Amino acid sequence: MSTSSVRSAKTQQINFRATTRQAETLRRAAAAIDATLTDFVLNSAMVRAEQVLADRRWFVVTNEEWAAFAAAIDEPLASTVRFRELKQRPDPFTDDE
Image (cartoon, rainbow, N blue to C red; front, side, top):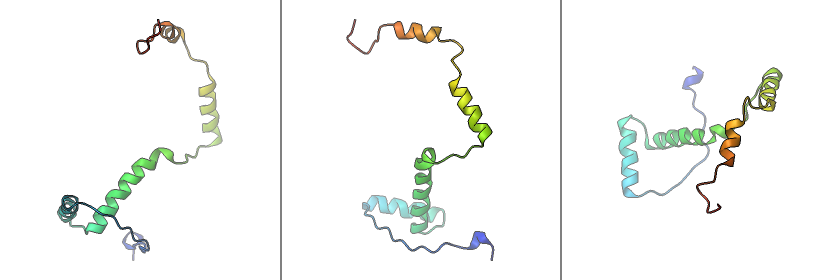
């Protein structure tokens, strides 16, 4: 049996309530892709959970990559003249004059 056809044992039960409309919509969507309601909801929730957590993960870099990153953020900006001019302009979002 290939590893792609081996399923992990599902040992956790998650219960939640839904409106009649929500439950029916989920059932119809699951049927449209020939999936069980459980598989449809779980797969959909996992996709969303992975999206939410994507920017909160650990990223691994080599020592060389880290050194290049550190050097890049330590470099002074090429030109800050426009930023200084912008900072000197009155703030349109405050009442200060």
